[in-house]
Image (cartoon, rainbow, N blue to C red; front, side, top):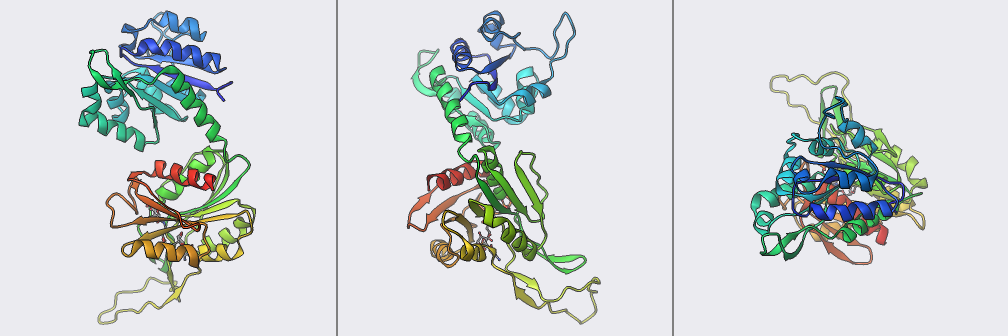
Length: 398
Ligand code: PMT
């Protein structure tokens, strides 16, 4: 799985830096091309000569090579990499990564990396347990980074507890699993809807909702990273995606979203309906701005929008899967299960506005998945990026 992969190995200044030598050897043995980037503190623990001898490349530590003035482009490095692994990652480097403190080559490279980033923390147990470290690790997870959890055991301080960097063999396995899993949607076509729909009243007003598109875009990006060709039908949102293999179709209204879904669905292996489609639209569109007249309050008459998920449920073929969302405020479970059956879905993902950090606009979500086989799987509050992974994992299991 690692053969031919370009990997940046980031080494920071911790006692576990000695293990990075084994990690580097294992990565090279597995066929990866490795570029080591080390912090100034890292060099206090392990010599760049050893690392460059093993990797066959000069080790990068500074922004410039002192004698030639050659600039090391962290941007180019970030684009070159298929993965970046930071092992060991000290509390200080974790804090800098979480907060964008770009004061060394390793952090600037991290901030420029387009590839998945794997972080293997290593520190004493008190530092590991400190609320600031915990918060920084959560922040890094919320940006989509992968944390390779430290293990428990005897630490450099001779104290026993959690903080030992995971063993190099396990880190290599973690990476191999990631790349294996990345390909699990190769050859599949996936349809995702995201964001709100806007139903025009007049040239300046519309009926809409608070959906930001974050949940749907995270799902589309996760599916594309795992090898799928994705059609993302997006309502009006301010976010964008630069992940490859996503064809974004921008729409405004529920009717437009419906039309594109109907034409895209037949070639899809599965569809995930995360858009917050407006249930109603004005019957008449007024092509001039409705004026605010004294004592005259206009009445907006509404019609029902087409139910896109229900329509796809009615034309779904064997082998196709349809996954819906349920956004609820009360009677959550019953409403979700009712929608699962009524729309002929294979799976429904409930998120409730009763849960803080869940639903519209947030970077996090808390979901419960119900399947038509009457399974119920609850998840804790997580970043929408992690929620997207959980959803795709479940779909693949099915
Ligand atoms: O975009 P974010 O800010 O990240 O927020 C994410 C989200 C809260 C919008 C998302 O997680 C979510 O819950 N999306 C579905 C919202 C919704 O409209 O739920 P619903 O319970 O009203 O609809 C049930 C299902 O039918 C949904 O899959 C919906 O896409 C679909 N539907 C609804 C109405 C309609 N006319 N056509 C549809 O296809």
